[in-house]
Length: 280
Image (cartoon, rainbow, N blue to C red):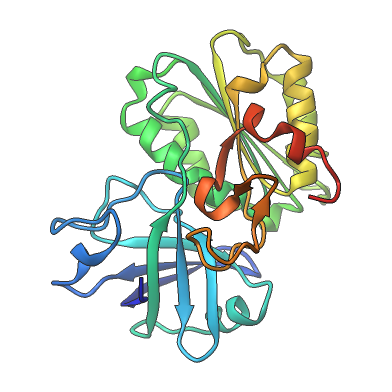
């Protein structure tokens, strides 16, 4: 699949090194996207696109927009390398190449009738945001919804206004923690796992969705299991070394699986032996 040019409609600076791009696919070719239709760009919460900056390179970026809005494609990006550093300088009206959507998705349909615990670390909140949009659009079909979010400092909190809106308007329990903070911070200080003892959930009725650094996901899983959650009810999202997005190049091979093709969202029991290995 060749990249399809899409115009940058909006740029939002989220934090010092994180920004959100809203793309507008050219009319008439939107149906060419894999999974798209003549009515717009469609994707499942948790999927990603390959974004190509012409003359620089291509990177996999999770889709962070609302899956119910098929007229735009939204990605939240941290500037951490050659391509994303250059993307940070992109301007409204510039063009990006897009391939996708690719990969697996969060179990938002299978979670209906259950409580949902969502745990995000840093920019890991971005791949979870479409799942949150989906759940909130059908809030009455889910039980308790709890979002635990940890990041480095108050200035690094993503989607701060949305967090307040979700907390106030959708019966969502939201707790935020930071690694370090000044005297004006009134919230929790510590890693995100310190929030888990502060909530209550029925492990037999709960599905967990986790995204963040691998070390954060390892300790979050251990903590959730300590409170009775089983591996079959835990889902994580990984973004290891993805290059081609279709399982051909082998860069993201993870045991017998390819993160780009079989993931990036995995049910934990299906990858547990590999996730716990240090050299995979």
